[in-house]
Length: 430
Ligand code: UDX
Image 1 (cartoon, protein in one colour):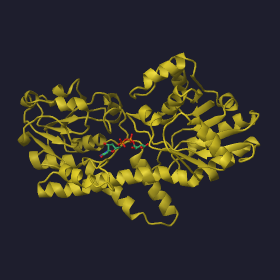
Image 2 (cartoon, rainbow, N blue to C red):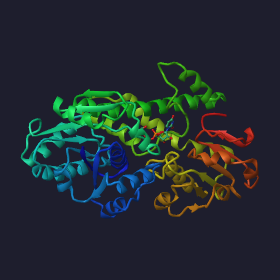
Image 3 (tube, rainbow, N blue to C red):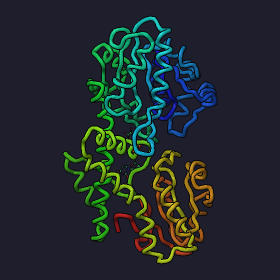
Image 4 (cartoon, protein in one colour):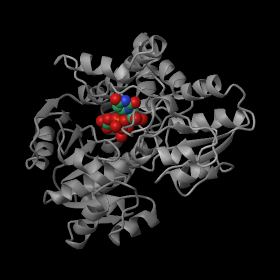
């Protein structure tokens, strides 16, 4: 099928490359000319494992191309995905500016199309957005939804770092549909995928995405609350999580305690659902606490550091890991941002290292020292804070500890290295 994807962020680009690899002809649309040029040259504009190779292959095979011309890309498509960002405003609401603009551009292209096509929202949007915001804009094309074109809401559950793999091997494909004809057409796109398909209404699909992300975030905050108790008791939260997770009704995944969740989705989506529920007259008691606990959890390592070193003024501390999780250069809502701010407020000299995210963090914290390696960050430091569980940090050795002024690693994430117990301490484990 001919597919057009509007927006070449994580979701759009991975979906575009993934669908092209399944035999579809994909056109990716973005307003950023530089990005479009890069894609057409077979270059990948984002850091994501496996994507550069797949993109290059699809472009060279002529299965994928990029353009800034929305109108002609839409006019030639059987299915159009809206995959633009829905960032958070200061109050936690989602900002619909980009999706409205994209829908307007799409409606222009739709007026040039003869015959039926389906427009599917892939961006994360609160219940009602597809039907009440996007659909009326699409009808400015002069066409009637359900008659001349179909409308679907098809949320995406891919994770950064494993995005392409997740897109190609989803646990389920959720198709929210305006009517059966819309859903039937969209489902055909996924005929080569081996995943159960959930056919449902538009609002249900929108809420499935928020429900999934909010429950995953709740699991993390829950295990961190238990972890904070474990810390008081001097016991290991990972032993507790393993035991709890063996109950098939509960599942072990997303019970890894640490310094909380970051990233472009969980913090934004939980807050957006809270705001939406408040607007609907509901009282989101659980979710408010999920966010509050996470906020406190992010800077727990600094509290622990103060207990260990007493006076932090003038001390040198290595911050190991800056991205919100390994496998990405993304620092959005990363605990490292708040940790560095807190350390600076306490007049600590920060030496930061990350294998991929230093450039991004430099824009956020320009007056921090960034080192070439974790060894360099550790050398001469009074302590190290382990913030992101990059596999290379498993290599930290006793020899590395000896280069520190005071050999001490406070762990915000669980690592698998072989270091003496009295030189390391976890945020929620001994
Ligand atoms: C998440 C969802 O998993 C994905 O389905 C959705 O489409 C987008 O949001 P992502 O943000 O890429 O994906 O990363 P994820 O691997 O889910 O981790 C999010 C955050 O939670 C990270 O900061 C991670 O370190 C933290 N986390 C995750 C924990 O603290 N403990 C866990 O057990 C799991």
